Length: 142
Image (cartoon, rainbow, N blue to C red):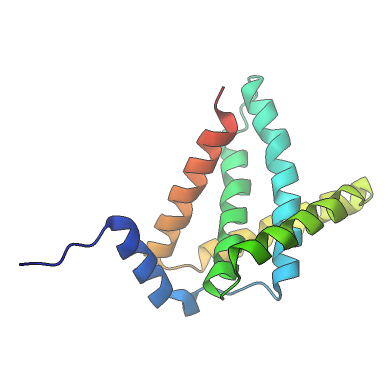
């Protein structure tokens, strides 16, 4: 009798085995600040996409960067509750930033997320891409 394993469990196991291949952000608060900045960007892009603008590739890139950053923190042991708390605080901090500082943070975090994605293994890229696709579908659902 062969043991069965779900695809999600296999993916999680493979991702955990390859975790050192990802370059984690400096700290969990830094990652939360980046995710908050990217979430603010994705909200505007999703609204533009729903209004008919051709921004889906840009939205996907922003979402994928956020997923890559989040993933490094969870793989490093950040708990869901702690991650949520950090993100809520980071979102408040981001809203208080001057427009130019907010735009600079979004650009820097987008670059950081793209770098993490580019340095990921093939299985990690697949998992990040799948999660990003799900998030884009959720953001753009009517």
